Amino acid sequence: MGKNRLEAFSDGVIAIIITIMVLELKVPHGADWDTLAPLGPVFLSYVLSFIYVGIYWNNHHHLLHSITKVNGSVLWANLHLLFWLSLIPFVTGWMGENHFGKVPVAIYGVVLMMCALAYLLLEHILIRLHGKQSALAQAVGNDKKAWLSMALYLGGVGLALLHPWLGAALYALVAVMWFIPDRRIESHVNH
Image (cartoon, rainbow, N blue to C red; front, side, top):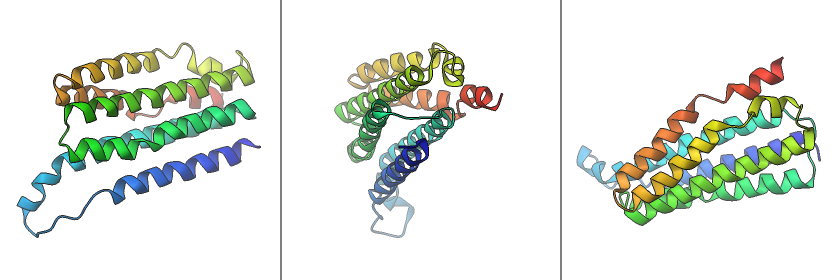
């Protein structure tokens, strides 16, 4: 299978994930501002998750742009990533509907952490396939930002069980860290 087919499949799954998330936003019954207030947490969780899915879509695109071939291990690692990403609509809805309750916020963080681990695994398998001298390997290096993200997710999960809004704030901090696309890969590929 060529990398283009893998990218097209992944793009399709990510588009479906976003569609599911937006379909979970319920139209309020009423025409005044007061009917929107209860939807605040639902909308905030949607925005955070939309940003996360967008970050993964963007970085996944750059990742696949840097490679020339795929194999069975890459396919399975990519499916593993898509599995965890596909859980984002569920935990987003759960967290929003329960107004950022302790357990939903903690589980949201676990899913985000598993997405990050799955992405790192895909990255590792691609580097193993293309070699340590590949543009991808050179661009990624030791990926300190990814490991810092993991630490913040873990901290966010623990904090969510005590103060869920602070846990969610840590997840938002990680999103801010990754909001600007990972230019390391793009710059190495263009050279």
